[in-house]
Length: 361
Image 1 (cartoon, rainbow, N blue to C red):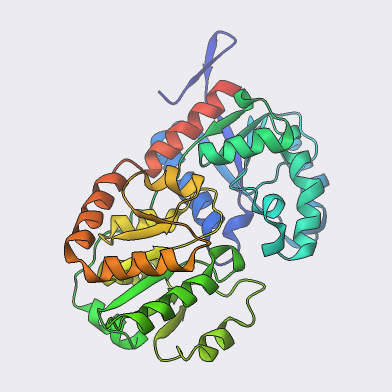
Image 2: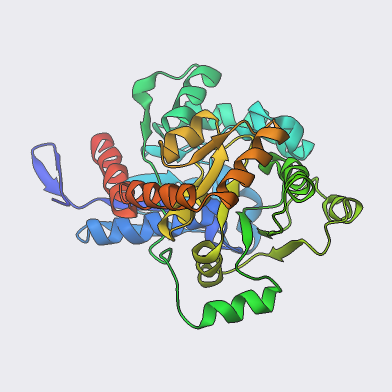
């Protein structure tokens, strides 16, 4: 039922969501915002959901003045900040999604001006919001311990691969591989090129595989350029891997599906995640997955992926070698992954989020 009992009567909820993550090229938080808003509208058609974003001069004082005044002048019942932020003052309940605490727990892999801002702003947001949403129990634990928040204030709403992610075997996939200069014997990484993704160790492990075995795969890295990785292309050249590593850049979902569907293995050795969607996207497309043995990713992938120590190049190289050398292992993890990923859906994410709204109102 899309209605809430309030003071003995039913009423339609009028929810405002932060639309700013949709204003630029979509990555993690942008996709989260888009999928959540779309699925909220589907599961609760009698409620109202509005995405808000500033224009012009409003951007300068949006969170401190522009947004609070807009909420005050309109009949919204609740504001949901999908990207770590809520209004600095509000007469209505607020919900904030904290996707991870990387800026606080791993400041060394981020630009320092963003770390400084997060150190004073994130605690303020966590304490001022009426309710907090995290994508995993792992992040919930970190939020409670870091900010002294009671567990009852934090709800966990796992995310899911977008509907576009499913196995592709159409005639356009070979054209994609040809365009990128790769064949079907390749391993794949998808994500922003940033230190937290542990790409330097992945390159070292890949080089070790090429040196110590008769295997000759390519490594495809699909993702936009991030930060603190200006020397990454030079690192690849220094290791003599320019002809074995393809930097594909940012790709749209259709192309990503083609790569997920044809790679020999998907490798995601991240040092820290709040949830970790790329491994689930790969599973949805039938790829066997190698990923890090860290709390959030272990929670996300369950037992459906080959786990490695992300700080151990030898362990990562060994996992890649085994996955590429043993067809039965690849088939085993591909099947596990496809069964596991069926447990996740954006409909369920929206329903859990809707329950948070209803409890507050």
